[in-house]
Length: 210
Image 1: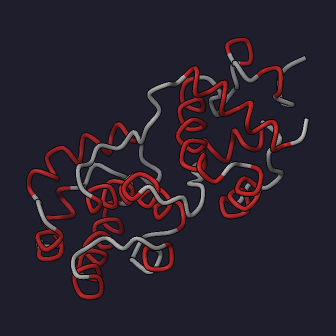
Image 2: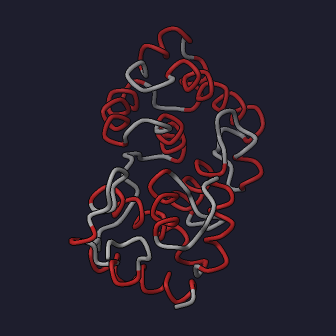
C-alpha cells in the first residue's frame, strides 16, 4: 500500500474512532491558544489546562500579559516545566504582537515563528485551530511516534516528519491528521508499548507484533 492510500485509511479509521477530535487545549481567543501552546511544550495538556483556567481569568488582553510583573507572571505559570523561559516567551510575544501586529495574533507562518518561543508546531496549531489555515502539520511527540511506527516516515526530527507527511496527506486534512494521531497516541499507541490488540490500524501498521 502506498503511503497516500495508507493516510486515507488512517484518517477514515481514526475519524470513526474519534468523531469529536479537536484541540485538547482550552482557549477562547487566538492569543489564549498561543499562550496554552507555548506552555504545553514537555507538559501535558491536562496540566496546561489546569494552569490556564485561572490564568485566562487574571489576564484578559494581550496588553495585560505584556505589562504583567515578570516575577508574578512566572509564579502564575510555575507548575509547568521550564516555566521561566515560557513566561518570558509569552510576555515577549505579547509585546511583539502589540508593537508589530496591532495586538492581533498574526495569520502567517513567517510572522508567527518570529515570535519568541514559537516554532512550526505552535504556529501550525494556532493557524489551523484559530484561523482554519493549513500551512503545515503540527508534529508533537505522539505524531512523530505514530508516523514512524506506521511507516509514514523514517525520520525523527519533527520538521523532517512534517515534510514527509505533508505531500502524502490531503491539505484539508492536515489539522485533522495531527489531532487524530495525538488522540490515538494517548489512548492506544503509547510510547512504552503500542497496544496492537486494541488498535484499529493494526492491519496496516508495519510495527505490529506478528
